[in-house]
Image (tube, rainbow, N blue to C red; front, side, top):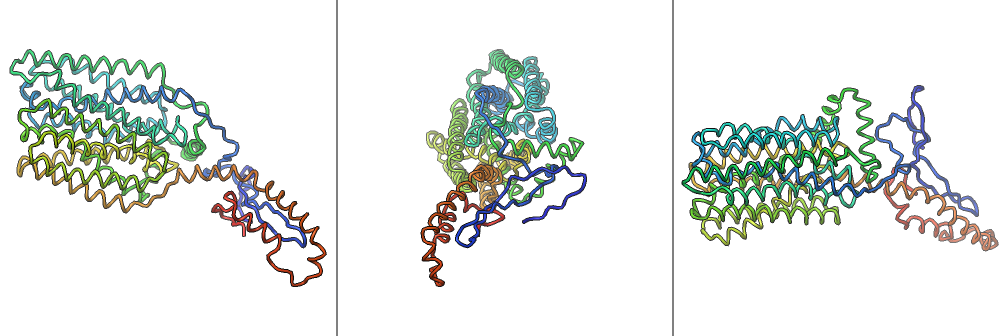
Length: 551
């Protein structure tokens, strides 16, 4: 029996963890329930009596995810609305150039890096509802400021509005795995995370599609101004509606957790907050734990490379493709739309596949390899100047590259469990923003100095490096292990009862063969006791890996 060191001040609670040992006792079989420890300290943060946990799924979870998707969509739309019509923005605004327009996208990435730490701390201490409300308000204020920028000399006002809206993104990107963990069941979390990412990608898709349709490529400045005015007012209306939807319908968490793994994580989080009386101290402890997790660090860099490449392609799509298709401004917007729409399908399909198979490492590696392959294909087929071929290659690139986003979130949550999903997702997004800025600046400079091909090859080689790092990640699936452990603990309740029934049957058999047993000292060892032992060891409930093996 395992010994437990106890202090006199510790209040003791019984442990439910046990194993079973079968001991021959003469003619009978004795079933002994062996506890790992008779008592455990209540202060042990890793102990949760999973048999006492109640779980429930609430229909409200679909409404909450739907509102969040609308919120995320409204933010992502604003991210790309300038970059996709770069040449029109430069034509209209007097004090603008290609680099300034690129910064309307990169400001989203730059602002996220410091604000993510603030947003994650606020999420852990404020709760889901208040942080969504705060971010949505920033998003709406930024969109309203841009309405006042419809003047050829007011690009700076437009940039201020874009910066405010960019700050709101810090309260969005790490949210999908948190909502999935708080509201959705164990067989739904990957799909739910994918749907949460779906909202963001839908906003990017609309950002590629709508601005070229609303803002005309004209020499008439009044016509361009009218287009910008319609664009900004429509965006502000949607962002304002989202604020009210969050205020009236979003809740922090359900009354009962959706899964035992979620309940254990919430208990661990509560225990950590009690141990670290300062919420900042607890947050710092969580960040420190993640920074010591080698598989997560490998994922952190490889995720940043993949997603940063995606951000760079989205931001630079107009400058990349316009030299090859100078008369296809709207078609380039549609190509961007194609990339994101393919990614919408990819993210949902990949998330659904992950929920069904739980094959995190293989799925992540497969998607990453295919992203790299189609980036190389896009790089070299672009030189052929075939628009239809560009549609096909960008579709495949978007399918796998965007499909990787929720997979990376879920893989990160598995590797870092029971730390907050928002913390791991936030760090992954910080990496993505960092590499996004780096790749936009480097690829943009390479394109100017050495041509479009040089910039595209740079991003392709970066994905090759990310692929190697992804293959090197050790698949330590902690959250899946927690769910399996809970299932095994449920099995423990019936274990002793079933073995006692087997023992009773064996006792009757031994009584019937008692005369033969006593008269033969060299009785064959393959008797009923051994049969019972083999029967027991073949049962899935009893053959699970435990610290106290059965035999």
